[in-house]
Image 1 (cartoon, one colour):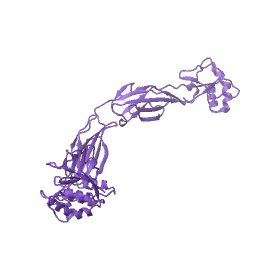
Image 2 (cartoon, rainbow, N blue to C red):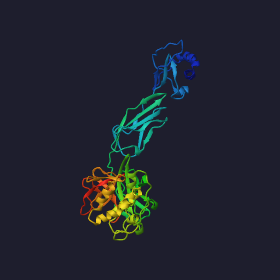
Image 3 (cartoon, rainbow, N blue to C red):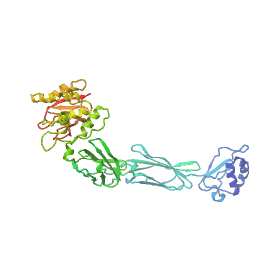
Length: 451
């Protein structure tokens, strides 16, 4: 059988081709085609040789020749003999199977001397979750991470074996990931609306059956700072450090249960305690962005929970900032003036503020005066009476006896930030089609846009 080795050498080295074809016919009578081999037409024949059809398939044994499996080729009468590649048989998952939501191990039977090509597609959303991936000889499994699987979705698993440049694909295998209930976690600490001390806060939530992990986010709503962004963990508690909490600020804790690629979120709002001195002190102004609307909203929100001093009366830091002394009047307008001063819209307000107070004392609502005198001034804004249909964040809304800034808007609601709302700066929501204020309800007068 040494001649067979020569034949392989001749195939790889054209200089030996004549010798290979001279010895090859001598082998034809003694060998039969063994199982697992097939004829393949050669790409070319040496000059002077003719193609001959064989009456039977010759056998070429890799073991006898010593040729490495998958590399041996022999020419016989113009016909090349090469290993026969068969498609792999997928053993898991079964056709049409429903698999649990967990890391999935795909399995198949080995094909002799084969490497493999594998791909997995989410048929439901047409997402290729495992692109064509090459696997080595002897490998008969591949793990799909759970975070690439979605409950209830159908998938298609494609697998091919490759031997000697010949690729054979197995029939596609379809399976589905089990549909499961995907509830959001219930946050147990802090409680809704809680006021917590400024110290390490241990947030907690209930475990959710089937969840593979949890995500946690924490945003300071007062300063609009994202302290924790989608922190991933497998437990049901997360410590928030004291240096991530600011006295008097309001926060939103968000926790999600994760089911593969599905996330279910819960929110919990809380605030951080202030000492009495802290509660009545103006908070540092956030940096200006240069975008007027954004700056107005951020500055107004930065003062949420700053309140009047003591248990009664209207002495407060915003009025002192405007007038230089304590005042006794309601101070929502003083807060508005203070915010406008922070964005450089202060001269006109300060100059006319005493006149507004005097007009209120003689029976003309000071908010009407504020709107007519300040809002109609071209350098400051434009007055829009009655309707709240077109308000935007940063606009100033006025009621018969109250004033506040629009913080955000939605299809049905307006959220606004104002001073002297429960003796403190606070954020509240009114309906867009009936934005009345207070108890008894006060008439909405309109809004003006700061320019």
